[in-house]
Image 1 (cartoon, rainbow, N blue to C red):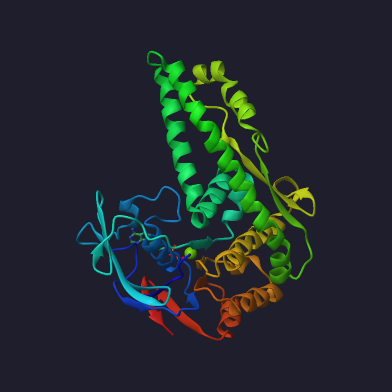
Image 2 (image 1 turned 45 degrees about the horizontal axis):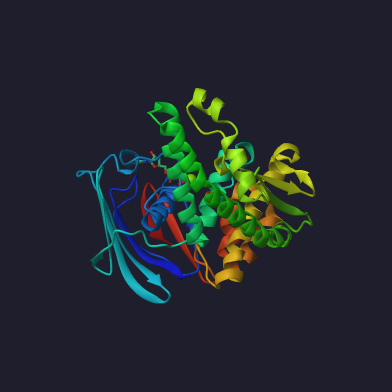
Length: 365
Ligand SMILES: Nc1ncnc2c1ncn2[C@@H]1O[C@H](COP(=O)(O)OP(=O)(O)O)[C@@H](O)[C@H]1O
Ligand SMILES: [Mg+2]
């Protein structure tokens, strides 16, 4: 997998950010500033540059466009590094279109840069809602496994077709559903296998990472709750076709891997149900850092890591653990905080670029 870094960025008309050129460190970038000044917006811009979408849910173009903009377009100009080679990457986004250029060549395809966004506030949603967990795992697995991404998009396409048939019930729709389900079997089998394979790789890293960051010994393990675990094709077919009468009444598909869920066990207990909010946050943060560690084992490369407002969650000792964890890391990281004490801790690190965001103005300090 390719190694990506961002060296320079200029953004025009993106939220409250000023149109300045910012240079980043290849290692640690600390972003300071009081609340409401644009720290998260800067992380969002970096995320958008690589992923062509926000990490905020349901974010449309008008929300991203600066309310003070004179023209309805957002322009990104950047210099990135791909495996040590510099390349300009730029993009122009309007309500209807977006054009991207890499090395001055127009590129339709997204560059496949892995990015990990860490916001401890997401822990609550992650622990509360199955759909958030599913999306989280789907996104993370897709970043490291292109085949998984393909299976998932073909599964989703089949699901959409199947749901349309169930809703509109055109003539011979039952035959068409059977045809889709026949195709669905192997995709389900592959996706379930890949989900389990991912957990098998991630699980051994979770508890050691928890200990490294939080200095506490806990057993953290994730399991896939799927009715398709270890089933052969015949049994899969039986399950996905078993609720057809009910599905016809409801107009959507009840059974499939879009209903799978994950259980996080904290010392053997379901963390969604039994853990304190603090323990849930620590587990969530550990899970994300374990995922980053997985990159090292698997690819000897790293994602770009965006950490937003992590400070409020941790006490002094844990801050310094996290800081030394980051300090010894090889990835490019952007970490924001409005907390003065955490700022002091962060400033102790070597190889760090300190950036200050004040009313959208991005300055180095
Ligand atoms: N489209 C937009 N145009 C101008 N300002 C915006 C836009 N969207 C959000 N903002 C402003 O961005 C600020 C919040 O930025 P944010 O990055 O969340 O701050 P923080 O430093 O707390 O992370 C708010 O002042 C908000 O009004
Ligand atoms: Mg913020």
